[in-house]
Length: 148
Image 1 (cartoon, rainbow, N blue to C red):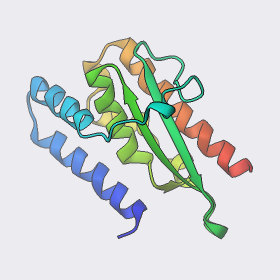
Image 2 (image 1 turned 180 degrees about the vertical axis):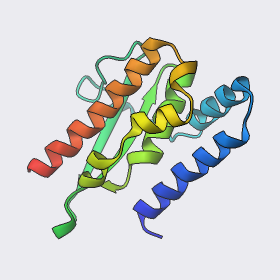
Image 3 (image 1 turned 135 degrees about the vertical axis):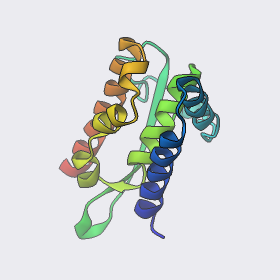
Image 4 (image 1 turned 90 degrees about the horizontal axis):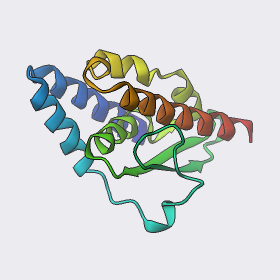
């Protein structure tokens, strides 16, 4: 299984798990649990360059770009936050985007996924704006990787 297939399987599993949880308290706990499973972010990646602007919480996203010939660059992400629910949102974004080609990243609408999971109506507007800021940061990195 390629990294892209693994990432797709991972986000599909998250969507399936969400569909099994009827209660929003259970969904919140699930999102927080996803965040707890994130690999720890290396201290050297907690810097101003990796800090995501537009988030109420502290959020860092570090990007690694690997050239991949004619298919274009593949981007991998690691991230962290000082807020439990935001760490869970990062985990959902990493499952959606990490290990994918830049063109796939630009073609994937994580905000639609966010809405499909029902997160938009159950999170504060600040958290929703922060989520959009993280998505825009990831897409900006993909555009930069394609331009090089």
